[in-house]
Image (cartoon, rainbow, N blue to C red; front, side):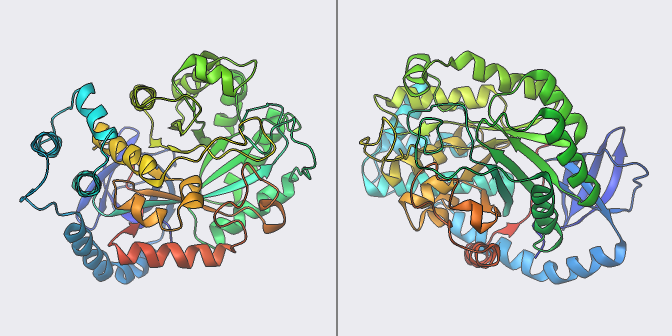
Length: 433
């Protein structure tokens, strides 16, 4: 199973190529030498990551061609919004019509959507978000993998189970060899084309060591690599980019500086935002977002989070529930409801319908067994599978009983492929450009 569909290069303009996917044309940034019109390539996140032979491409495209259009037809039918809005509040109807016409909504209109309580109204909101997703992104769904390389962390976030102050946790730090072999296996055996390397804020690895690991992975496997190692100096980000990393996953968690200080003792929001902006300046794809359900958080705070994510020009938006670990100061914090998160995912799509990829997080799947399906039908178009070795995965206990904690990679793949087929999605990434 390939988590991308190959495309054919139709044109080359300096560093950018135009790629044809079953009649859909997208642009991608090319860093490969010798690429020519007529070549077949894989692309992820708007980057060309691999050139493949015409025979290999045709074999895959032949397998996918008929299924792709069947899935596309199903996706269109599921995302169709009925024109009749009988019984729907007039104000909601006007707001949804405005959004489907491609017009920007006001702050007051966004807050109105965030505050929806009526079930039919919420369902229509989600369906409209799904319509916008299909309109601008077709039936593509990004399927990325994540490898949690270490649960050491020097920070003390007030909700996190791998915080430095948490006792009784068996700590681990994967060796360079283990990380490389896990990543190469994910690409070569399981077909992943994009991977996230993630850890706590672990200073047990130097930037040079991480750069060496990234270089070795890139030399052995064609893959788009994201990093998620917490806050890093710009020079370290630059070193990892030079080694081959191309994306940064780092949530800012909240746009409210006072709330940020409460959940991150001794830390400042501006410092974290500067890391994200530094990474963007260096050329990294940015994956960021916030937590829903923080203590004292208001709907206005959540809306400000969404505006901030848009300001940061995120490639992917990651908004999930705050799930406190029982050994942390926020242990008694009540969990947000499923609809609290689904409304935020739908609003992500409303605020950036054309460019933004929206991820269904493991956190949402943990509080709601059917969350992946519901999220994808509420405007999301990205999922992450956990490819961390099982002996380490259970130790990356940021919160208890994480979804997919005990599932093999093969089981996760089978589940997500079955789900995507049932809702008309194709596991591919047509890029940010």
